[in-house]
Every structure is written in structure tokens, then in C-alpha cells.
Image 1 (cartoon, rainbow, N blue to C red):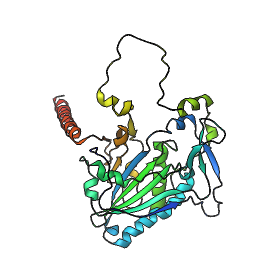
Image 2 (tube, rainbow, N blue to C red):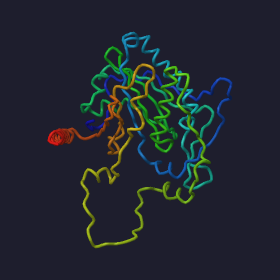
Image 3 (tube, helix red, strand yellow):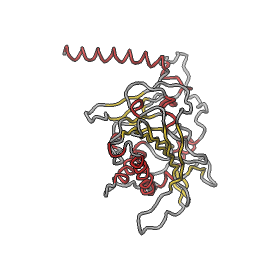
Image 4 (cartoon, rainbow, N blue to C red):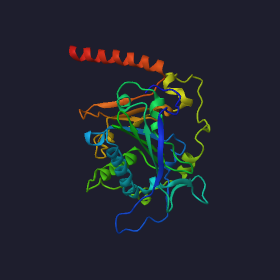
Length: 334
């Protein structure tokens, strides 16, 4: 992606936003109010940038130019969502400080809480332009991801109908990293997709039990305290520290990191109308991370994504082409 200041995309219209609450299986009572404490491993992500993903889909012949077909797809996605949220109820919760405790936080679920689900329509940029391996402007993709509602929400979803002829869908997902990691968020998406597709047997449901993890109280003060405070030096040296390449120290000394994994099977998130044509982690444009996913063709490769300014992207493409050509010639010589 070519990193440019995000702007409201021309032609994007939000049709509706609803709050989808968890729905128990038939015969089971509604979820009671409950609080799930954040472990110290969760607390370290409190100030982190939420993870933003977009899944691009091309609709098949049965769901393309007929408005009823597209609306039926949207209805199935929304109607199957409460079942998935029930199994992953912490995603309908809100983060708050734990009452009467210091540097402790919890996910509080109360009756009436839910996940913001937005339906939008785009009559400008189309799925064929967005679901490609070529660099694209961030400003065209970023509006496809919703914002987290105020008040500590940890998950929001947006489905945008795309041209041409309403044959494309973009599923935007934003999730707070303190609520779940990449394994948990993609597990939720696989479960939702299976429910939408009408699978009788859903993926194995999560076990939500904090007693299975031994908490370390002292670690909360370390991870939940302000992260930008300067540590007390433990040693001093007159020798200058090694100079790291500037791309690794940019963005206010943010660490160089990888977002995503080849193990998450993001290209298997099929809601019943086909596998994704393209999956992007949009938030790497804010964090400076490199995104990783499995090869969508299933050939055993890997997809890597980065966000750079346009001029840097051109330089990167030339360097990548040179490196690929060199590797190809080296393998032929061997």
C-alpha cells in the first residue's frame, strides 16, 4: 500500500450501523453480566494501535447484479453474527479500569452490549482495483475499516458493497489487541463465517477461563504503567551504541514488528460466497509493521505487505525486482 494521509473516500455511503448483541443457542439463558480481568500479557497492549484488516470478496453469479442477492448476503452475515459473538462474548465487552484497584483492567460485559455492525456502499473504487497485489493508495482502503465506538469497545465490523455492479464486498474488521490476539480474532472470524455459510458443525469454540493462567501481580504495574517513561539506567558505557538503519527506528522509535501470521488461515474465511480475493492488514500503515499471511493460492508461499510513501514504494519495487532476479539467476546456476 502506498501510505498517504487517510481521507473520507468519495462515493462511500454508510447505509446503517446496528449494535449486534450475543444470542444464546435455543433453550439457553442470556449471558449474565460478567467481568473478565486482563492478564499482564493483555495489559501491555492497552495503548497499542488496534489491528485493522480488510477482506475483499468477489461475489458469484448468484449474488452479483441482483440487488436481492446482495441484500440476502448481507442479511445472512448479520443474522449469523449473534451466534458467533455469543461464543466470543468478550468481544462484545468494553475495557475499563478494574474498580478499587490500581493498574488493573477488565473486560466488562453487560446486558445490552454488542458489536457495532456497519453496512456501507461504494460507487467509486471497485473490488478489481482494490483486490490486487499492485500498490494501492491507503486513502482508498482505510475508509473500509470502521472506527471503534467510544467507551472502551474492542471490536467493530463494516461490510461495504463494491462495484462493479455490486459484485464486490469488503469486510473491515478493527479489534483491540488487549481483548484478543491474532489467533483469537481470526478464530472468531472463522466461526462467524462457518455460521453464515450454514455449517452445522462450527469450529471448536474458545475456552474463556482466566483461572487456567497463573497471574503475576507485579507484572501489571510494569505493563499497565505509562510505557513512554524512561527506564532507570543499569549500566553506562563511553562507547557509542551501534546505529540502526533509519527505517527500523522511525515512528517515534516504534519497534520493528510483524503483524499477522501464515498460520491464521485468513484466506479460508469463507462466508458461503467464496474465499477472499485479497486480505490486507491496514493498520501496518500506522504501526510501521510488516504484514504476513499465507499464500492465497495454497501453493505454500507467503504474502508480505508494507505501507510506504509513494516515492519509497517505487524504490522498494525496484529493489525487490533486482533481488528476485538475482535469486532466480542464482538458483539456475546451482
